[in-house]
Length: 269
Image 1 (cartoon, helix red, strand yellow):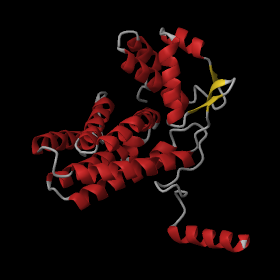
Image 2: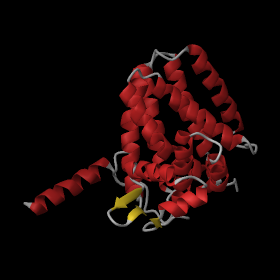
Image 3: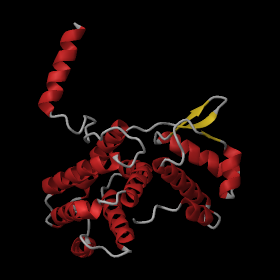
Image 4: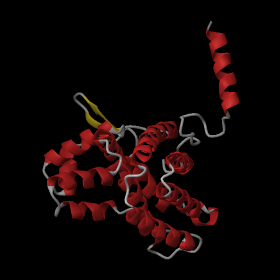
């Protein structure tokens, strides 16, 4: 089994980084513990206890908790402080729906504005990962994560819309926590071919961008995010079956969804 992300390692890093990075490290560490099931729904997070644990003042802890509230992981309740929310796989589907809207628009806008050299570098690295995906070495996961980060960050930074890029940046810490814990938790990913499929999905995005094919690039990005939903749904401890990127159950077809909607409408009249 591949090693799980190490929250304690991140805590030691937090003592040596600036204020903004320290807050991000705390957010990342707490997210990982939530998705590993080490911080369960209903758990009360005490600011001073977290400050002592991370070796920081209460200020970055409060800022991290506000950031976690902003992405739906904790509730900040009057007279109770921060409480971990139960994040369902339905909510994961909703998050993916938002991500798909944002990143597909960023891909559409970035097409034609990313240098060929940057895209060819990604293309080369993805082909290398693809060749190793069925029998990976110990460094494979770290490299796959780094290439994934580069691609999505490059698209966001090239979209020529500061507000869109900022919103993607605000949510990407959540997306990447899902990804990293899923990478480490799922022991069957190599046998099931999911890493190979992910490399091919990324490669399709890059090659469409190289061809300046906006429509194909957006379609490839949309498909890539949709395919992530099923895997991210398994990240959550005791989660219910995963949903599609539009929030509907994974096994539900559009026709059955329409029939259910008609029945509900008829029964309510």
